[in-house]
Amino acid sequence: MPEVQPGVPWTSTEPDDQSIALGERNAEQGADAQALSDLQDVDLAGLQVGDYISFDGTQFVRVPSSGGGGEAGAPGEQGIQGEQGVPGADGSHGWSPIMAVVADGERRVLQIADWTGGTGSEPATGSYIGPAGLTAVIGDAVDIRGASGASDSVLQSMYEANSILVANTNDTPEALIIGASTIVGRDSTGDITALTGSEAKTLLALTKSDVGLGNADDTADTAKPVSTAQQTALDAKVSNSLYDANSILKADMDDTPSALVVSSSSIVGRLAAGGIGALTTAEVLTLLGRTDEDVQDLVGAMVTGNTESGISVTYDDSGGKLDFSVAGGGSGLGGYQGNGSDGAVTLDGVATFSWATLSGSTYTLSRDLWASTLIVNSGVTLHYGGFGIQASISILNNGTISGNGGNATAAVATNNGAGVNLATGSIPGCANGGTFTTGVGNAGASTATAQGGNGGAGGASGTGNAGGAGGTVVGPVVGNGRWKVLQALTSGVIMRGSSTLVAAAGGGGGGSGGGDGTNRSPAGGGGGGWLCVTTPTLINNGVISANGGNGNSQTTAGNAGGSGGGGGGIAIVNTTSPITGTGTITATGGTGGAGFGSGSAGSNGSNGVVMATVWS
View 1 (tube, rainbow, N blue to C red):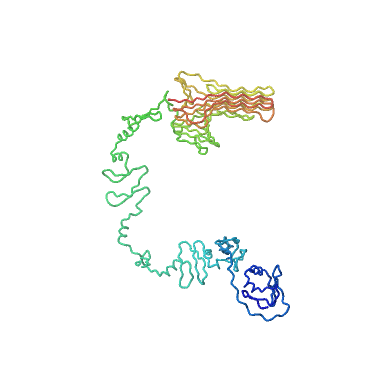
View 2 (tube, rainbow, N blue to C red; view 1 turned 45 degrees about the vertical axis):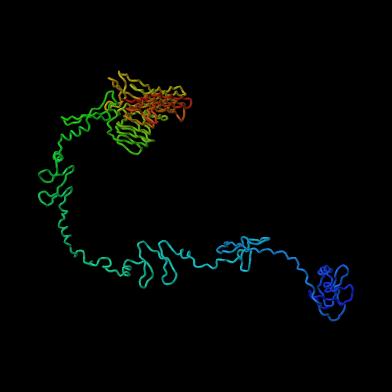
């Protein structure tokens, strides 16, 4: 069978009616075009020369050759070209990657972050660009940064504070620390280093002329000449030997100076005739153009007619004297606010004074206080100690001003009145509490011509022994006219009417409790004192008190009664303007002590008197 070539008609050499000359049918029978289409489905694999293609009625089949045939005939004419087939569909557009630079430690690599420009399904993202294509492992990706170059940080780490980098015998830099006020350089053979002054001078090759000292030489100081101007100035100097202690140099009749010793409290001058010397008062007034009368008139004009703190001053020109008149009687405080001779006083619990003792933060007066201003700080106590408290200008109390009676202590033999041993004070002392006992209680001390409260009675013991009576207070005989309570300079505390001076005292002492025959009862509380505070202006933010002392109780054994509280004293405040501040003024009775065992409690002391008076 001749070789079959595409598009070349061929004829089967077999006369079998069932054989079909494929090329001939294609050329002559257009109606068999469908058969050619079916022929495309024939499996031509293994087709050899001499084989046939036969149609068995249903399909085309290959019929192998049964033997050698004749020689192949000449190729037939090329058949008519068939019609152009329908164009195929367009292919999809390709995708372009969008790259991102990502870090892999010190390396930087490219990663596919997205795709753009394509059609159809978008490829997967996240792969990295490796040396042979895409890779999913970041470590296999190409480092786009390349090899590291020289790093400034390497040099920077070599620096230290106040340093430079130098390279001396080789090309390796090293830090050279430069100290303060230092010059760095290099001599003809050495390294770069700090230079001494001498080395810098050598390198600069300075001469005297370079620094403006061309005329300087090395002449010794003792051999240096003195200029004319210097010698003139030296000749004009005055020798120190002319001076004496406390002296001045003077030149009287000629130009020769001499020393004049100036005595203490002296004035030096020169009258119209005579030399320079010390002047008398009269000579000074003469030089000032003033006489004694001029000075007296000047001072007199300053004070005449003025009244300060209740004191009027007039000038007696004929005698050259100042006359002071202190207001008294029923006008103002009559001078009883004091003269302020102790000055401005601040009690802070630290400072000490000659007129008081300091224990902890408590000051106790040892004489009358005559302050100009008085400040008692918070947390500080001023105890009157049997003396008056006066301030000529004002008092600011932020702490405690106290005339309280002493509190009783359990079963002791001491007296507890605040007024104990105050007989030498300018104010009468207050009453003592009754002393301890194992039997019938002792009475508290009473006060006469007083203004305090009665002391409380002591409680009875459980064995029938009565407690001591509280001290009583007997008031003074009232004189005619209104009462005025002040601190006098010489006569102590007085209650003054128009014609009567009456001494006074504070509250009565509390009685001691009854003992049970074996065990002692406690002593009574002391009576409140006679506290007198006098000042034109009082700001009270603390406590001013003349309270009775508290009683006490037996605390160990037995059936003793409690002791009585001391009676409240009298708290007197005299001012010329209303009292201001947030504080209190009290004279309450002390609290009775509780009984022990079957003993009964002591009684409270009676309240005393508070007298706050504004005097005009």
